[in-house]
Amino acid sequence: MIRTVLFTTDISGFRLIPEKDLILIVVPENRIKTEKVQGVMAYCKKERIPFVIQPSTKTRRKIKEVSGLADHFEMFFPLYEPDYIVSWLYSQIIPMSILSMAEKGNCNFHGGLPGAHGLRRTLEDGLRELPIFWHVMTDVVDGGLKLAFDIININGYNFETARALMIEIGIEMFKKRICKDEK
Image (cartoon, rainbow, N blue to C red; front, side, top):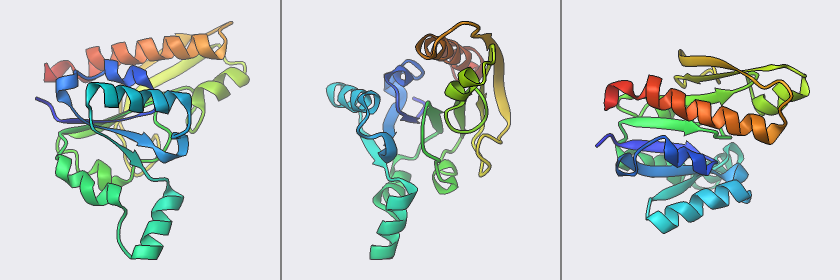
């Protein structure tokens, strides 16, 4: 068993890692009311996969201010003892204090221009090619070592079509180029 914690906002994340290896799913507070995150939580409940909500930075500050303690998320996360942390279509920054708990490492999938809403901004800028990559997460957002990289043609694609293609290729990249040594 490869003890993996998956940070995700999208149900497609369950296609990355065998269920037997998933020890925890993390969803972000800042997207908790969206249909996609509600779908992730419903799937977890149905399949009895434990999940937690990562508090936003604002909520974490409030908790610390009121109680003087770290938030529950950071306090209990070490109990899971993950081998890996995988971030898939995730919308909040994962603190280094959490990332450092993964014994064997971490990786994040990113599609489009660097920063938030990369795919949307790539399309809005009229670019015909979409860079997608997996990288190690560090204290510099999207600044870690690139583990796998590809460019896909999205000329003439709308957001949903480009996103679906990005997801399929991102999953394929993960299985063939990131997890290849763990089988």
